[in-house]
Length: 171
Image 1 (cartoon, rainbow, N blue to C red):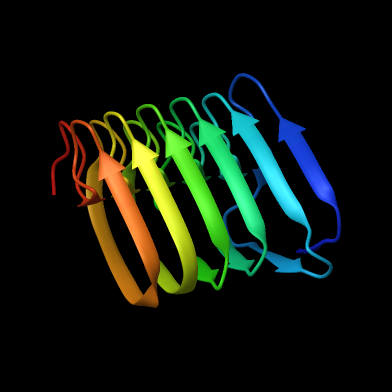
Image 2 (image 1 turned 90 degrees about the vertical axis):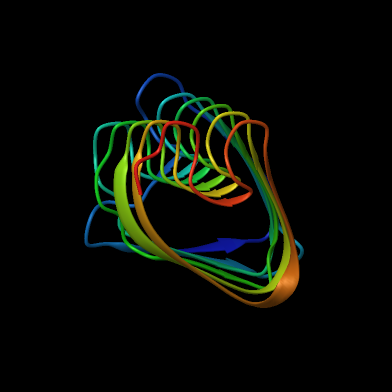
């Protein structure tokens, strides 16, 4: 599924739902056409990725501006208590990804996650309180491969790692 951002888009969901669901085996790709942006807010699901208790497919953000916030899911990646995930590719995008207990980018809370995250260009600001900025969510099991080819990356967590594992994570 391809999304073309042309205007400002605002999405909000509650409960276990994801704002934009990337089902296991699917590829969800975003492209910026005319200066478009996406602002998304979720609770247990990811803003872009899987609903809670599910696995996600591949996510590709190609340029554009994204502001994603989730409570227990990853802002971009898996919802809470999901499973293995597809890959996440961030290419030349401006991203602010924030989660309370999931990763900013990667796994949600309690996710046993195996995934590849590739960042090539753009500006990434990924933050979590208990999860990793980029990597695993709180109390997860992580087998993440994180590749950063270039770009400006700010990854922060109060109780986990900026890049890698979170609080209570088994690697």
